[in-house]
Image 1 (cartoon, helix red, strand yellow):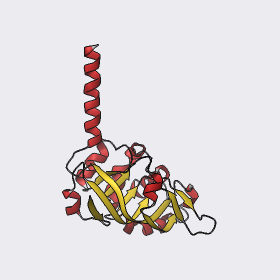
Image 2: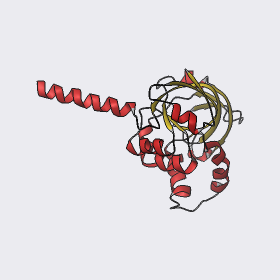
Image 3: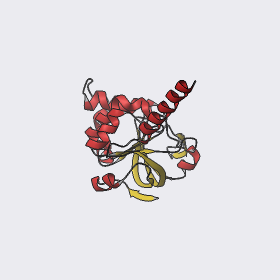
Amino acid sequence: MREITIPISDDVIRSLKVGDPVALSGVMLTGRDAVHKWLIETFVRKTRQPQGDDQEVYEAIKPILNRGVIYHCGPVVAGLERGKYQFVAAGPTTSIREEPYQAEVMEHFHLKGVIGKGGMGAKTLAACQKVPAVYFHAIGGAATLIAQSVEKVLGVYKLDFGVPEAMWVIQVKNFPAVVTMDAHGNSLHQEVETQSREVLQNLFVAG
């Protein structure tokens, strides 16, 4: 298993290949549908004006995302009443929902990694080559196990989006994942889809 420290350099990203198991350590940010939509509309495409603490939050997360990692995760968090947060469960959510936004977010913030479940599409794969960056597949159904790699919750932004949709800043150690989309245009998800389609077509022909 390859040990990777966040922030991640371009050289490290280009050295990673589809199928490589990794252990990630450093600071990362969680973000799902509400976060990606907010980032795109307010700061990337600028179709809405910043409101409330938008600009302040943007300035705070920029250095975290620069050469950093965003995790598609809706965590279960304890200690909300006391403000002493602890991740109880931190499993990945389905990434394809962010396909309309992800490439632009990656390019805008110079993201080096996206973590999620199920892979992403052609736009994100193209961005992985351009930025460069990779997609890390986390293990679905292992939310409690993954939470054990979260050493500390450093903070939270946009809690008004709701606990699962907020941006949680987390410090992780040996977060387990596998590279399934690399910076060289390879996608394990695309390969599986192509092979599955061929098998299905052969079944129809045989039938």
